Image 1 (cartoon, helix red, strand yellow):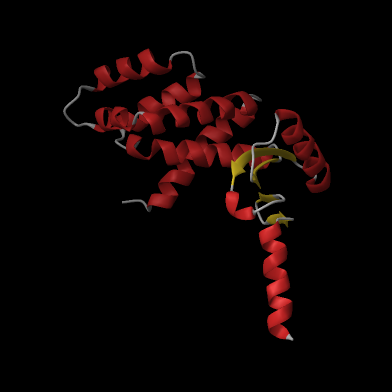
Image 2 (cartoon, one colour):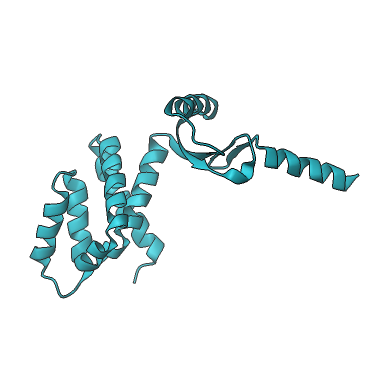
Length: 179
C-alpha cells in the first residue's frame, strides 16, 4: 500500500496540475477551500461516501446533489475518491491542493493577535502593509488574545512581529536575569 503522504500528495498534485494547465487555479482553489470547510462541518457525510455498503451510483448521486455547483474537476475528484475509498482523506487532499495553489499564486495566510477585535479597515491596512513588505498576497485572520495585555502580534509563516506588552515584559525580565 502507498504511504499516506504519497497518496495525499499525488491526489492534490493531480488536481493542481489539471487546474493550473487550464488556467482556473484560483477559482478551483477557492472552491476546494469552500468544500473543505463544508466537509469539516459534516464529517458524517464522508463516512457515508466511504462505506462499502452503499452502491457506487448512489455515492455519485449524493456527490452530484451536494456539489454540482462546483468545478467538475472537484466533483470528479470526489467521485473517484469515493470509488477508490480514499474519500476519508479528501479534506487533507483538498487542503494540500489549496496549499500548492497558494504557493503558486504567492498567497500567504497568517494571524494578527490583539486584545480586542480589529475593524475590517485596520485588518486590510495591515494586510496591504505586510503584502508589500513580504512581497506576497497576505490574508490575515484576527484572533483575540487577552494574554497580550496590550499591543499586537502578527505571525505569517516564519515571519513574526511581536509588539505586545507581554513580549516587552519578557524581554525586560531576560535583561534583569542576565545582570
